[in-house]
Length: 143
Image (tube, rainbow, N blue to C red; front, side):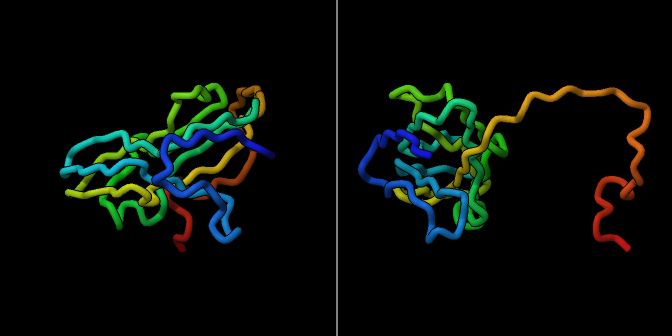
């Protein structure tokens, strides 16, 4: 699958798979951002894409983002659908700082993967699902 991509800056690395070991692709900060604890910023990621019809990108923090930068993604996971594909539709990371931090140009702060849209489904109402209970919320791994 080929995807048309626009870069807003030459200051960030071009997108690539990391050593071919993951199906997630890292995204980098395209601008230096200084945040104090409690502040919010939309951190530009320096790219726009034309996703194929029927696909969307799921954007999430990297596992080390909070440890390294003290920021969390305010919407937990970003969804970018194929209609967000204009020349100025740059991707952003909505960050909330839990400590004072500086994010530098090129820092890997999040990652994405491309997924097909959910198929059309119909919900069938029922009084029972007919399956054994697992023990309720948070029960996995308890004896």
